[in-house]
Length: 299
Image 1 (spheres, rainbow, N blue to C red):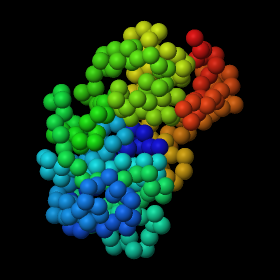
Image 2: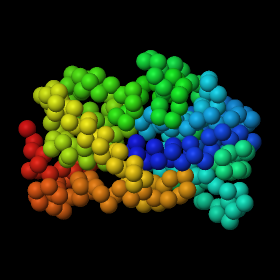
Image 3: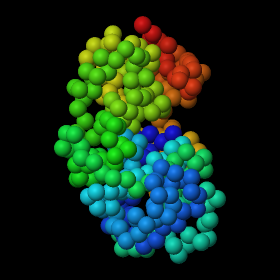
């Protein structure tokens, strides 16, 4: 599933290519892709036609395009969702087999464009939702000055790259939990945007075992883990995120290259880049955890 760097890469592309555009028309090719929208495909289209996309914002793994100060087009990419900006002049030559919805845009910075929602596995979705005020009065997410977030995102915590992220409060919350540190990192209400890949990478950098009990960790150790998550996600952003296949792409359909820089995730059986010990893979929450048994000793 795309994590913060992958979603931020998409947000940045939308910010450059479609913010300011007006939605002239909307086509929904698969009703299931707007299943979260009250009113179905017809209502989804009606609420977007004639509206201007005023920003491209993100909190954690959630992405939205405000259409005024009271509503936004909310996108969750699921496991394989893509938002692709296409030139109508050549889009007919490229018919994606998993095209689920299309916005016809006028007045975008790059001229008339299609904004296509492509989703092979159909876990992603689009909806037009109300914006609600942020409790702290700070902007709702990266890319928007509005102190508001989509109502379905209100429960999601700020991410470690958000200027309004309160690291001290996050550290205190983690230490109050009686759980393993990786489970805490994946809890999107504490610090959003961190998924399985970047949790493993952050824990390797911080030299902390994924199952270490949070209530036994000191403040400096928890802070070291969160700082490591910020560092690894920032580095991934400079390389367009982590792409293992054609499902993870930016708005131009291009893949990221951070997979080449991974030091823990997916490297079971290969030597740790710090001590040379073989990286180990263990089952974790119907997924996997990768760690070095020497650098990240279990306590």
